[in-house]
Structures are given as structure tokens and as C-alpha cells.
Amino acid sequence: MRALQYRAIGKPPEVVEVPKPVPGPGQVLLEVTAAGICHSDLFIMGLPEDHYVYGLPLTLGHEGAGVVAELGPGAAGVEVGDAVAVYGPWGCGRCDACLRGAENYCTRAAAAGIMPPGLGVPGAMAELMIVDDPRHLVPIGGLDPVEIVALTDAGLTPYHAISGELSHLAPGSTAVVIGAGGLGHLAIQILRALSACQVIALDVHQEKLDMAVKVGAHEALHSDADAAHKVRHLTGEVGADVVLDFVGSSATLETARTCVRIDGSIVIVGIGGGVLPAGFFSTPFGVRVRNTYWGTRPELEEIIALARTGQVSVETERFSLDEASEAYRRLGEDDIRGRAVVVP
Image (cartoon, rainbow, N blue to C red; front, top):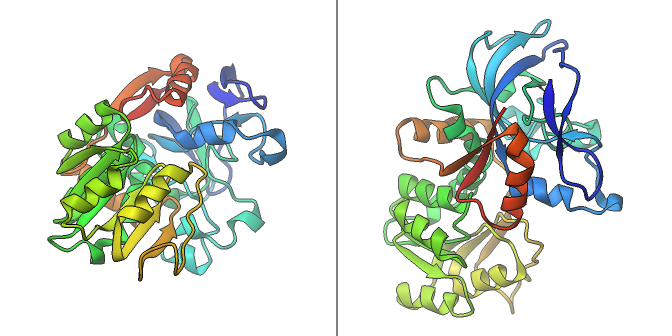
């Protein structure tokens, strides 16, 4: 079968022929119908050799959807022909976090060598893929897999970040979304679906600000040195109750720090390499700062339910497997509107 693999440090991924995978005990073989392209892929492919830990060659794709093609011995809970999305942050299934569905915070995965698809084990950028356990599959029914595959990360990640802040997003509150791209445009929709807060989007690209308004932002501002002042003006000089940073650079974290209100929250989602000093002389009194990783399996079911009712939709560009390397190049140049999806 054909697969898109990262094969050499610093080199672009390439399409190669690999052996057809065979599901082992408890495993599921999927015929892949859609695979999402993500900035996280660019991050790991940009790592120097002494920091790269994901193995080579690596079949990319941690956002995946497909149809169950074959069940390994003992696998149960899905049937051949089921249309499913893949829950990516695989855990041990036994620790306290896993037992409540939060495998994204599994305490044993690293020590046990358990890694997500596309981030350590073969992912969805292939004609077929192995899923380690049926519990990592969520039914999608008649939904278009191309339209929803990005929800497995680009939707689930902001959904998880926002879910932890809903108690601070009462009517009359304000949420700021920094970065209105792949994750940010979904965060705006999730905020509008789950709360009655005012949503302010910040971005450096006018095209993304226009999209932010299209999907529900009340205000869309250029993310510049004056952005925090503008946010404060829009909130009666109080500041934002919740700031969600989907960039995570030093500059955006400074914007978050200076526009959040007293007793507000800053949630760092982006992996832009910035560090936020938090303390008595840095952040306003009472401000909570947290970083998040992916989301829980129940939350994936919930974000797919929002898509089913039309409250959340993903802006997508489609690519063939042969076009995937070019899609990564365009993503690196910030030239993708919404999310790029590969259809093997």
C-alpha cells in the first residue's frame, strides 16, 4: 500500500510503498477515508536529530477517519464497515486518567512506550492504518469524513481547552481567541455553541480575521502591539475573562498577559515556543495560567455531536496523497485556509 512517510531528518515527507498492515490481537484495521494535516507535524519534522524521538521512517497523520476493514483476534465493539474517527492520544487504559476517558493525560503512556498514531506509530496518511484498540474509535455515521476528520485534533483540542473554562464564561463575559486559523476558527464556533460570551478574535492575517467574523466572532482585531489595549477598550477597561492562545509565541503570550482581567484565565494551546512568566509581579491578581494537551474521548464524541447538528464546521482544503508534501509546504508558509485534509 502507499503511505506518506517522514524518512530523513530535515527532509520533506514522501509517498512510498509499504507492506499492508495486519491487525494483531485486539486491533482494528481501517481503510483510511481522510487524514488531517497539522502544525504539530511540522513541529516534529523541524526538530534536530538530537531532539527527535518519534522513530524513522514515520507514517504521518494523527488526525484520522476511516471504515473498519478487518478486526484482529478478540477485537470487539465495532463491526466491519463501520465509519469511524480515530481518537488519537492513546493511553494505557488502566490509570485514573484513562479510566475517566482522559487518555490525553495518561500517567503511564510514556513509560510503556505508548505513542499516538502519526506521532510515534504509523498514522493515517496511508491507504490503511492499524488502531490499537476499538475504544479509540468513535462512530461518525453518515458524516463526511473529510469534513470532520480535523475535529479529532483541531476541534478536540480547543473543545477541551474551552470546556475547562465554561464556569468563567457566563453571559456578559469575554473570551479572546489569539490565532484564528485551523484551531482558532473552530474555537470561535465552540465558544458560540457552548456559551453566551463575547468572542474577540486576534490574528495577523486579514483573511483569517474575515473568516473569524464569518464563523461567529463578535470582533476581529489585528494582533499587534496595540491589540491588548483594544481588547480592554471593548471590555470597558476590565479585560478578557478568558484568553485562549492558539499561537503560543512570546509576543502572543504577552498580549494574553496584558489583556486578561483580574481573576481571569489564560489557556496556552499553541506550541510557538513562548514562555509566560506567571506570578505576583507579572500576571494580574488571581489569574490562572494553564496549558492543555488534546482532549478526552467523551469530548471527541461531544464535538462530533456539535458537527452533526451543524453548530461546528471545518473550513477545509482537500489534497491527494501525492499532493500531501506540497500541502505541508503551504502550511509552513501559512497558506492554508482552515485545515488541510488528505484523501488517500
